Image 1 (spheres, rainbow, N blue to C red):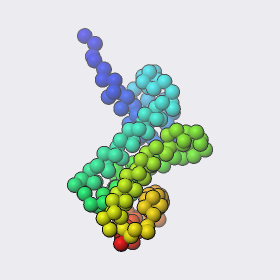
Image 2: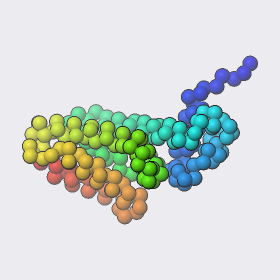
Image 3: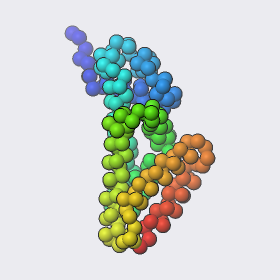
Length: 197
């Protein structure tokens, strides 16, 4: 009797192989053949599950987003106050441990791949960052309504600035300019300034 194949598990196996290559070598090295080798499957099998390389890239990108979301949920935990939630979200993005360094490097590989493709950025590159920014804005607005942030502060601008800062800090940590503790100290400094009514 033929063994029953778990198709979703096979797709995950192949997508995870692509993400490993993206983390260690960049997406320019993630040919369908290289992904097949990394996944331990045939090239034909990769092509069966993913008709095009773009399809594979997008599937793996969605899975990477799911990994970041799961990490955020763990970091947020029981946080309820807006500052606690914002601190957890932004702190978990900074590359301060093996998991966050892997996620940051892999996102960087994707951004590098699509920098010169405005259409790809428009279709796929801004959805997750926009969603994340909206979550931060909502928390900052709640803090402002509770009196924890000065009423004249533009919370949309503050959220965009915080996320841009965290992205920049992530690059400086990966590049060796500063370590994770220093990056967290800078983030905390800016949050202290923002959460002053």
